Image 1 (spheres, rainbow, N blue to C red):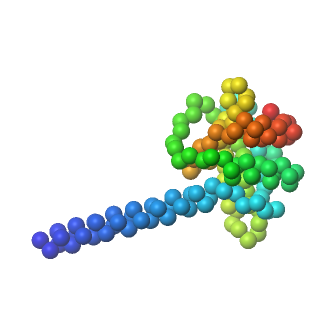
Image 2 (cartoon, helix red, strand yellow):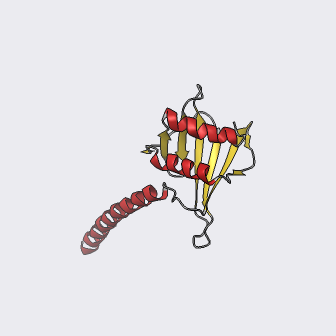
Length: 150
Protein backbone atom coordinates (compact mmCIF):
# COMPACT_ATOMS: atom_id res chain seq x y z
CA UNK A 1 0.00 0.00 0.00
CA UNK A 2 2.83 2.41 0.86
CA UNK A 3 4.51 1.69 -2.51
CA UNK A 4 1.29 2.58 -4.30
CA UNK A 5 0.94 5.80 -2.29
CA UNK A 6 4.59 6.70 -2.95
CA UNK A 7 4.19 6.03 -6.69
CA UNK A 8 1.03 8.16 -6.79
CA UNK A 9 2.75 11.06 -5.01
CA UNK A 10 5.78 10.78 -7.29
CA UNK A 11 3.51 10.84 -10.37
CA UNK A 12 1.72 13.98 -9.09
CA UNK A 13 5.06 15.66 -8.39
CA UNK A 14 6.25 14.90 -11.93
CA UNK A 15 3.04 16.39 -13.35
CA UNK A 16 3.41 19.56 -11.28
CA UNK A 17 7.09 20.02 -12.17
CA UNK A 18 6.38 19.17 -15.81
CA UNK A 19 3.63 21.75 -16.12
CA UNK A 20 5.82 24.39 -14.48
CA UNK A 21 8.68 23.72 -16.90
CA UNK A 22 6.37 24.01 -19.92
CA UNK A 23 5.73 27.63 -18.90
CA UNK A 24 9.46 28.25 -19.13
CA UNK A 25 9.57 26.63 -22.56
CA UNK A 26 6.74 28.88 -23.73
CA UNK A 27 8.56 31.93 -22.39
CA UNK A 28 11.70 30.80 -24.18
CA UNK A 29 9.99 30.52 -27.55
CA UNK A 30 8.60 34.03 -27.23
CA UNK A 31 12.12 35.26 -26.56
CA UNK A 32 13.50 33.22 -29.48
CA UNK A 33 11.04 34.68 -31.96
CA UNK A 34 12.57 38.16 -31.84
CA UNK A 35 15.77 39.01 -33.65
CA UNK A 36 18.16 41.34 -31.91
CA UNK A 37 19.05 44.48 -33.87
CA UNK A 38 22.82 44.15 -34.28
CA UNK A 39 25.46 44.35 -36.97
CA UNK A 40 26.11 40.62 -36.65
CA UNK A 41 22.71 39.59 -38.04
CA UNK A 42 22.76 38.20 -41.57
CA UNK A 43 19.48 37.81 -43.47
CA UNK A 44 19.41 35.24 -46.24
CA UNK A 45 16.50 35.03 -48.70
CA UNK A 46 15.50 32.30 -51.09
CA UNK A 47 12.58 32.02 -53.53
CA UNK A 48 10.49 29.02 -54.48
CA UNK A 49 11.01 27.99 -58.12
CA UNK A 50 9.02 24.92 -59.05
CA UNK A 51 9.57 22.44 -56.22
CA UNK A 52 12.88 23.81 -54.93
CA UNK A 53 14.30 27.09 -53.68
CA UNK A 54 16.87 29.36 -55.28
CA UNK A 55 20.22 29.61 -53.52
CA UNK A 56 20.22 31.97 -50.56
CA UNK A 57 20.81 35.65 -51.29
CA UNK A 58 22.40 37.49 -48.38
CA UNK A 59 21.27 41.09 -47.84
CA UNK A 60 24.23 43.46 -47.73
CA UNK A 61 22.14 46.62 -47.18
CA UNK A 62 22.08 47.30 -43.42
CA UNK A 63 19.10 49.66 -43.67
CA UNK A 64 17.04 46.99 -45.44
CA UNK A 65 18.15 44.44 -42.84
CA UNK A 66 17.06 46.70 -39.98
CA UNK A 67 13.73 47.40 -41.68
CA UNK A 68 13.04 43.68 -42.19
CA UNK A 69 14.00 42.85 -38.59
CA UNK A 70 11.72 45.63 -37.32
CA UNK A 71 8.81 44.31 -39.41
CA UNK A 72 9.36 40.74 -38.20
CA UNK A 73 9.71 41.76 -34.55
CA UNK A 74 6.57 43.94 -34.62
CA UNK A 75 4.41 41.39 -36.43
CA UNK A 76 1.36 40.24 -34.43
CA UNK A 77 2.43 36.61 -33.83
CA UNK A 78 -0.16 34.01 -32.94
CA UNK A 79 0.53 30.63 -31.36
CA UNK A 80 -1.33 28.44 -33.83
CA UNK A 81 -0.62 25.40 -35.91
CA UNK A 82 -1.42 26.26 -39.51
CA UNK A 83 -1.59 23.88 -42.40
CA UNK A 84 -0.79 25.74 -45.60
CA UNK A 85 -1.97 24.36 -48.93
CA UNK A 86 1.34 25.05 -50.67
CA UNK A 87 5.02 25.54 -49.99
CA UNK A 88 6.15 29.04 -48.91
CA UNK A 89 6.95 31.50 -51.70
CA UNK A 90 10.05 32.71 -49.86
CA UNK A 91 12.17 31.88 -46.87
CA UNK A 92 14.22 34.23 -44.75
CA UNK A 93 16.96 32.84 -42.57
CA UNK A 94 18.18 35.18 -39.85
CA UNK A 95 21.63 34.14 -38.67
CA UNK A 96 23.60 35.74 -35.87
CA UNK A 97 27.17 35.69 -37.14
CA UNK A 98 28.67 37.07 -33.95
CA UNK A 99 31.67 35.00 -32.79
CA UNK A 100 30.28 35.18 -29.24
CA UNK A 101 27.13 33.23 -30.16
CA UNK A 102 27.05 29.71 -31.50
CA UNK A 103 25.35 30.23 -34.88
CA UNK A 104 21.82 30.97 -33.62
CA UNK A 105 19.29 31.25 -36.43
CA UNK A 106 15.58 31.51 -37.15
CA UNK A 107 13.92 30.57 -40.42
CA UNK A 108 10.79 32.39 -41.53
CA UNK A 109 8.48 31.00 -44.22
CA UNK A 110 6.62 33.60 -46.30
CA UNK A 111 3.46 33.12 -48.34
CA UNK A 112 2.15 35.81 -50.71
CA UNK A 113 -1.62 36.21 -50.90
CA UNK A 114 -3.33 35.55 -54.27
CA UNK A 115 -3.83 39.33 -54.71
CA UNK A 116 -0.12 39.88 -53.97
CA UNK A 117 -0.96 42.52 -51.37
CA UNK A 118 -0.51 40.62 -48.10
CA UNK A 119 2.22 38.41 -46.67
CA UNK A 120 1.66 35.55 -44.26
CA UNK A 121 4.70 34.52 -42.23
CA UNK A 122 5.46 31.50 -40.08
CA UNK A 123 8.45 30.82 -37.86
CA UNK A 124 9.73 27.34 -38.61
CA UNK A 125 9.53 24.86 -35.72
CA UNK A 126 7.71 27.33 -33.43
CA UNK A 127 4.04 27.13 -34.56
CA UNK A 128 3.87 30.93 -34.76
CA UNK A 129 2.13 32.67 -37.64
CA UNK A 130 1.36 36.25 -38.56
CA UNK A 131 -0.40 38.21 -41.27
CA UNK A 132 1.50 41.40 -42.00
CA UNK A 133 -0.31 44.68 -42.56
CA UNK A 134 -0.66 45.89 -46.14
CA UNK A 135 1.97 48.56 -45.47
CA UNK A 136 4.51 46.11 -44.01
CA UNK A 137 3.74 43.63 -46.80
CA UNK A 138 4.44 46.31 -49.44
CA UNK A 139 7.69 47.27 -47.71
CA UNK A 140 8.92 43.68 -47.53
CA UNK A 141 7.83 42.96 -51.12
CA UNK A 142 9.68 46.06 -52.36
CA UNK A 143 12.86 44.84 -50.65
CA UNK A 144 12.42 41.43 -52.29
CA UNK A 145 11.95 43.19 -55.64
CA UNK A 146 15.22 45.13 -55.16
CA UNK A 147 16.94 41.77 -54.54
CA UNK A 148 15.42 40.43 -57.80
CA UNK A 149 13.49 37.79 -55.90
CA UNK A 150 9.98 38.71 -57.07
